[in-house]
Length: 490
Image 1 (cartoon, helix red, strand yellow):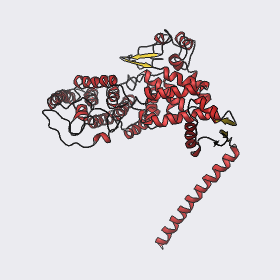
Image 2: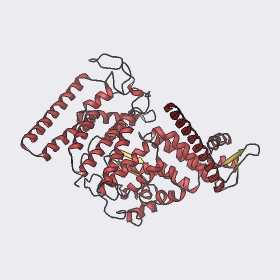
Image 3: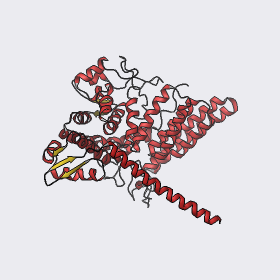
Image 4: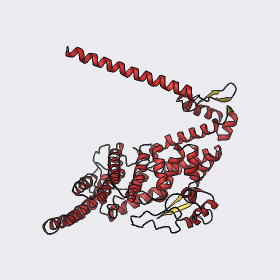
């Protein structure tokens, strides 16, 4: 089906930079670095639409009301930041130093017009002197240009027109992937959902192996944004050994997403086989021996996992690289950092989270969970909005894991095991018990927690009664509606 196309733009890391500069939980150094990266990208790629979207005094999502420049007096602005899914909070903790410069914007617009005129000339010449392939190539340049400068509406329109004129299935899938990334860049979940389903339909109609594997990463990342971690985990974990979608996220980010989704959603047996014992994950968060086993190929998982040659992450071949992580670096000195460009990812909190949960070190688990919230959940644009839910679900998972092994548990001992007070434990368990998430009762008089092991037959009986009541109610409403329509006819 040919090599993948349209994978260069938009640059999704820029949307993470936008999130970081408005994130009150990000460090000052991280915010400054992200702001500089944004400024450099806007100037280098002539991104006039993105500059306007971010910094315009009337409609920009970053500048506070009334900010402007000497050339542009302050004006009232709409409350766009309240509705923008690109930024971390409706009220950024500090002013973002991206002032509006009308002169600079006019220069960017002029550069954009010049480039568009050249593309239009190429398309006109192709229509007059060349064939369909040359015309499509010119149209593809236009679509990629709009994706590069982050003009959302124009890019979507151009890609849709290109899709309609394209007959090659592989190219159609690549176009839909580009549309998905545009939606992800601007945080448009509805657009992403629609086109993930569209890509899945195209792939099922005859997509090649590489695009099928790419789709898993796209689906997994989308499912994270809509909090379907139980569906995202198998896709992301399966992508670890065949990952090539570097236009979507880095390999280190994929590991983080796979670990976090798998830890919160998989049952203990699957958690053991797919996360704790997975060679790709052990190579990053395992012990020194585990990382050495992954380096020497002693551990193997899936196609290509045991290959000795690790392809470079920048390889543009359509054949997936077995893994993008530098195992040699991981095997040295017990460090579990991965360097991606200028970014160094420390996986130690994640390693502690996985090991402490599996081994029942609940005090260490709560400590690791706190660090994961601060260093990963709060810093990532896809997971930040779900961090409170994630932390709550992980606490629930730890409580369930401990309580299912005992009939009666002393509250003092349990609180000591988790490193919390009895009052906190009592308050935390109340919510889960009321929501029927934990089958137990708290006896504060005797200071114990008694677990209730529900009988499967009783549960099935209660489910039948509950669902039967719902069905009877619906049938009664349907019968009333039918009688009303019959009386109207009479």
